[in-house]
Image (cartoon, rainbow, N blue to C red; front, side, top):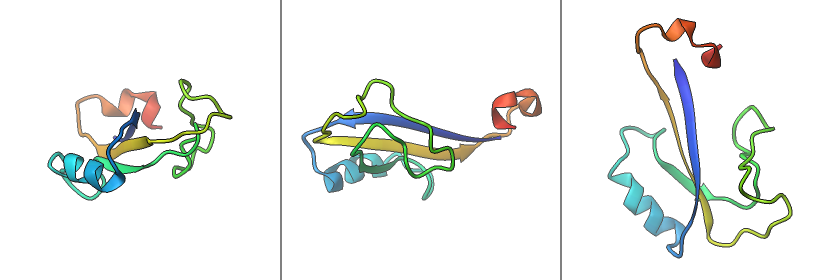
Length: 85
């Protein structure tokens, strides 16, 4: 089953510093990707209606970043999990 996970963080570090920090946890090119977060929308995935609820739509986001991971898992009974269908 494929999955997507994301967190929004606020940091005084610049993007390059955050990428350096998270790079040691990366298992592949799709894990622990760091990008600037400029709105509450999660804009780079197919489901355009995904948002961070804790961020206000009209809020000016300074020093906010998104850290996200794409992955897959072959855990038992994964075909019964409706989230992946």
